[in-house]
Image (cartoon, rainbow over all chains, first blue to last red; front, side, top):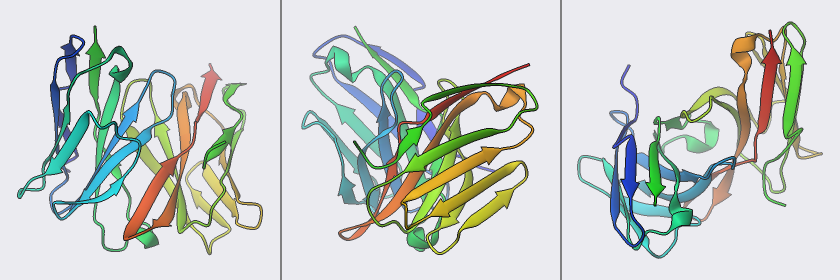
Length: 116
Length: 113
């Protein structure tokens, strides 16, 4: 079965550079979520999109932006990178209808960002 | 403290023993889900329990939910070395215009062979 695809899997950037992460949700999933997980920390919600519109916003820095495109894939853009941005970035997808009744969120394998 | 606090933070047991992990939360929830994460990998959904359910089983997993105490527990019976991973609870709560999933800090489980 198709899963959530993230690219790149690993990325090394220097401070103040820009990075873009891509996420391809499971087919027919209309909601995409982005999470950030620092070393030894729990996943922190950044932002989510439903039907190409931002649906919720978490602890996403102003230096970061994201969007969902017409084909439902999403991109997370990170600018003016800082050392503290080094983390594993997860994308997840789900079908919004029925989320309250428990539609599962499926996670990608994550993109490792290292800022040096 | 934040939604989805878990204890213990780390647990080390022998293969064959049972492992119990607890999760507490603060706000009303729609449902609570447990996820597993192997080091540096994505989170894998294990089991979901709805707010009107009290107990649920899936294989060697047993989840309980006590909405009056705002807590849940995950029991893994007859643990195996392959169960070594971090386990997270996630609560799905109503949010203006939608729903939000909030993860707890996780319990690091180490099963010794």
